[in-house]
Amino acid sequence: MFLALLALCIWVYLFAAHGRFWASDPALRPAVPSLAADVDIIVPARDEAATIASVVASLLSQQYAGRFRITLVDDNSSDDTAALAGQAENLAVLRLTEKPAGWSGKLYALAQGVKATNAPLILFTDADIVHDPRHLASLVSKLESGDLGMMSEMVRLNCRSFAERALIPAFVYFFQMLYPFRLVNDPRSRTAAAAGGTVLISRGVLDRIGGIESIKDALIDDVTLAQAVKKTAPVYLGHSDLARSIRPYPRFRDIWNMIARTAFTQLRYSSLLLMGTLLGLLLVWWVPVGAALFGNDVARGCGLAACVLAFISFLPTLRRYRLSPTWGLALPLIALFYMAATLASAVNHWRGSGASWKRRYYDS
Image 1 (cartoon, one colour):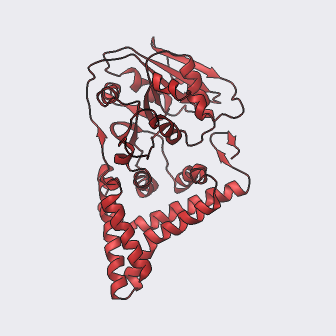
Image 2: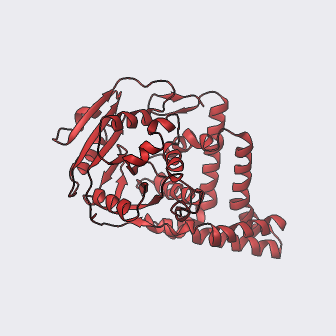
């Protein structure tokens, strides 16, 4: 009974006092900036032949009153990424052939793009994100109106295959639980995070924190960048209805690998944090289910109440992805999948395989 009551207390706190993480907001809306400052758009790309043409075309189509230039940083691709990007007057391709020791590949590519450009605003965007023509103007308007140093968005992720429908909305939901967007956006809160698919930052703010070089070895680069920036300027994190990822995760194994790649990094390679996280997730997700099914009257009531709060909290995310509410009933099983992938991330680390991405391996 005690564990069931504790789980219910945790869910009451999460639902009522944890930055309304479950609300799946705020979301960036179309807007036009009063001052259309020049923008450098930097796209790091490594073996992105499948997506790069669509991404660059969407960026070239931006309806923006100011000047913008796209710099594609081809990070030693083994395919035709650079060639498939095409040609345009405001598109430059920067080719890299090697990565110095001590750098993550993406951050080294971003740093070289920053060095090759000079606009007062910089948009970092991934090579699998396609943009509505109004997106750049809306990003600049939000940065300007909020007097922000940096803003980022959780773009709409691909959600077509059965595996994606089962697991991708939960990825967004768990990210919101870990970093409630309202707390990230509150200057009084120490919570800082970003979603790396789309990051707009002032060059002055980036220089103030020491540039990309100051976080050069970070594997979870978006959150690390936000934590550095929030010490000097306000940041914003929201959802996007104007950008979406076209990177597919057709199989459960694809999503497993995505989680396992950096989950243990997120826990700072700490076995103690890993144990605490797994026990905490069991308490939050499975104690209520067990109590609801097998507990006595009081425990059953606590378990049912916690299950209802968990179910309700997932509904806004499911609505954002236009999925049936019945997926909420599978949330404990989905959480179990994420727990197993997190444990696999630790096992990979202990076996010495570390994090990897597209033929590139990193020591922890």
